Amino acid sequence: MFVLVVGVGRVGASVAKRALERGDTVSVLDRDALSHEQLEQGMSTTWEEAGGLFTVGAALESEALIAAGVERADVFVAATNGDNTNLVVAQIAKERFQVAKVIARVLDPARAEWYGQRGGIETICGTSRAIELVDTTIASAEAGS
Amino acid sequence: MYVVIAGGGKVGVNLARELLEKGYEVTLIEQRRDRYTVIEDELEHVVQYGDATEMWVLERAGVLRADLLVAVTGDDEDNILICQMAKEKYMCERIVARVNNPRNVEHFNLLGIRPAVSATNMILRLIEHEVPKIGLVHLLELTDDQIEIIEVEVIEGAPAANAAVADIPLPDGSLIISVLRPDGGFVPRADTVIGAGDEVLVVLAPGLEEQVAAVFNVPSPS
Image 1 (spheres, rainbow over the protein chains, first blue to last red):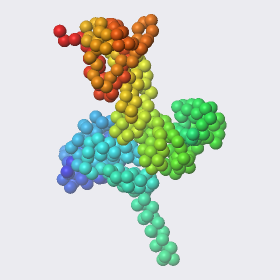
Image 2: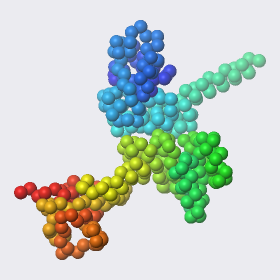
Image 3: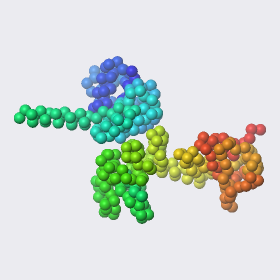
Image 4: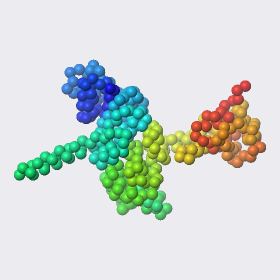
């Protein structure tokens, strides 16, 4: 599988490394060349030595997406720190480049839900998960007291 | 008519002022606290504070009853999202989007956000119009209606040079609507003879530009 991850933050870097460990071909795109360091945290080799691909460029630039291999991607992960950037670039990957599986990380639960239901792209909302977990924990504390 | 404007920068505020003057009902949404304070001094209750890409902010602004939504923030992703939600989630009939980076025009088109207005591209068009010899200038594009108007200069030796309008081999779907000469423009008749140096306005269906240009500013193969 060819996995393209856009945005190398905590989520993007970890997802990229795990996919590489599973044997996928992994390409990452980030506008900041220094994000390379975050990617190599905890690795014994460099990202490239481990077989990873790295492209510096903006998510919304078609040339950068193409250089990062969007045209042969099986999975596309939009994990920049901007919800709106993720939702737009994910739709571009789906509509223009026909990537089979497109995932966007979205922090706002409302936008994540609506765009998830709209079809085409999948949205993953860490905020909703955190809310549920915290709420469940509080509820169980209340039940125990 | 009720208009919701997302983005209280120079464009948004001036639009709000003009529309209020015309008697429209307007709500302007601005997400930066300091900017909001400044424009709220002038526009008062017309301005609402918040991020227009948040659904509750759009709903509070009354997007559900808006006749028109205008997204003119300084961020193209935001403008795309605001318009997409207004159109598809809130069934707003008309939208207008601002394109900040002209390279993003293709993304607006891909995602069906129309009309998308790029100030840079509009100024470029004007420059092309002012600087002759570029050949072909797009004057108007009505994408939804599949109609364009272009301006093209006639060169010596082109099929149209020294030919009567009726004899010019234009492709189907195009029509000469005006001839511009230094002493003024006019609407030609079938027997008007077009000369080298004339500029002609042609209305045409999209995609015919090259064929049309070939008639006016490419020398005939000899």
